[in-house]
Length: 428
Ligand code: GLU
Image (cartoon, rainbow, N blue to C red; front, side, top):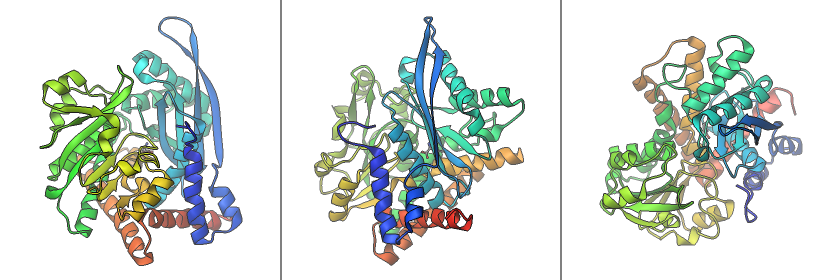
């Protein structure tokens, strides 16, 4: 979100420029890759339940499609901005490339707060969004998916609207659909599980075991819940979960020294990932301000909410015992904070590698849609694990070989891949 000088698009461009310089990329490629290829802005008129029409602003940004159709989620958020969507679209390009998927990068957003809208109103937003963008998306052009505050149900409404307009079955127009309605088994778990597959490989490289790792997680939406679930299943101890409280309009952390119980927390969490504070207290969780999620004495931080979570202002609040950061969110660490973490020898697995499980499973969903043949969950998760493990080791090995941090190694791999594709196509 753009606020108080923080601009995610500038941040994404800064990260790109740094590596473009290291790779000595030609000027025309830099110009092409530091901005989106195309973007769409629209106003969506939506009939409200109480009567009257409200107009919602919405965007779709296609950053690059040299490696394949653009791919990336659609976010519903009251503070969405075009620059946030641009940054996220750019990060999707690097994400699909580092995950070695035949896809490009895109992202969409609607400025709205689903927590304040009925299901019918949300359905109308989804349908209006597709009416506005249907000519410019499609299985061979640009394929949306869920993201912050959008779910399988939103994807199904969008697919249905697209099919009504086109007059046919097009399950591959969108991914993250419900199982049995064109969705892949394992898609809901994929992003969160992927974060932990990557963590498992990292711990193996540095000779550590899950049993000795304590963690604090920011966020309790779909990604955070599944990351927490697998982290605990693998033997880790999660002591703190922070999440948004819609009633107080601020975040809180829920802390338990001997580890949180994920099923218990889930049973008192709404569909937007807000934990009921009264029920949490009754169940013995200590409540702290939301910002405290990074102040706890743990080994591992998992930011799994929004961008700009760790920045210049709060990076020094991270205690010295924290050794690892593995990101479920997109863009949670600003470049300034990243520098400071590097000086502290912190191991940071970059967001667009760690959270690439979602889009990898989306790719599997498209493959299954094309085959009209659906794989069992074990097969999906095994393929996902293999793919994430391979991507992690490519980045890890490159970081060792070039003696750079993992973020730079991941950027080098993905920018090189996309740059090569642009050149091979004769664009440059
Ligand atoms: N929104 C997810 C992400 O940021 C998934 C994108 C997709 O599946 O296309 O990676």
